[in-house]
Length: 270
Image 1 (tube, one colour):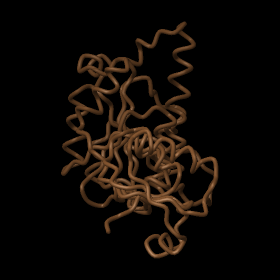
Image 2 (cartoon, helix red, strand yellow):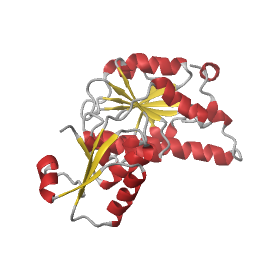
Image 3 (cartoon, rainbow, N blue to C red):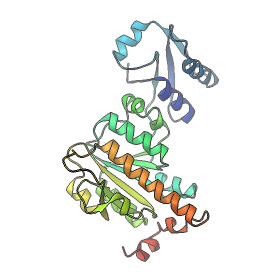
Image 4 (tube, rainbow, N blue to C red):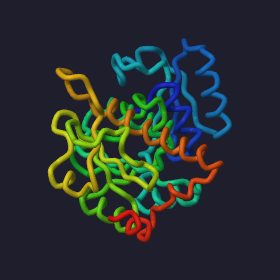
């Protein structure tokens, strides 16, 4: 048996998103919670076969994972491409906000970043093909199902992908501790790709060099650097805070934030 998707929220969101093929849903005979009932109703609407299992089934296949008495055989999450991610922002008439992860290998961090990204309106996440956590059941569980709705693009060369985004008019900004520009002093009103480095090693040198500039999160001295998920959440919040403030300040207009064409980059001195 392949990897099982498990947990009420990941399964429910996967069904809502409709981006996976569901082969079969397994439910513990002893689970009667409201969340499970809602999941069952949605699965029945979508004609998903349902099997009721004893607790030993979940123990055998999922061990001590927090599965909440539900699991499913599903197909892989469909991947997007870079253009699809950018087009989502354009179609939604929003200033692009894209994440690029460089070396985030912990599924918990990837899940947390994805969950925050969905909450903050990120249009998609770009992942390298190596040195990255898999889009696995554990990642989906860590994201509380947000992974099922997020667009992910895998690229063989992250530097080349970032350069293509820059040609499309987006600014590429790296989040890295100890840099000279505090995150609250950066201008996030334009289309952005935010690069978040991995646990311990941070952003690789060539990727760092490709960034238009780097921002850091001010911290007290003597405190270890924040992990990827926390740092990413703070940067994403600051971007959203600035953009909403800009909208309010101009009575609903967000023209300044729409300078993500090549002309806009030239006008901003890049």
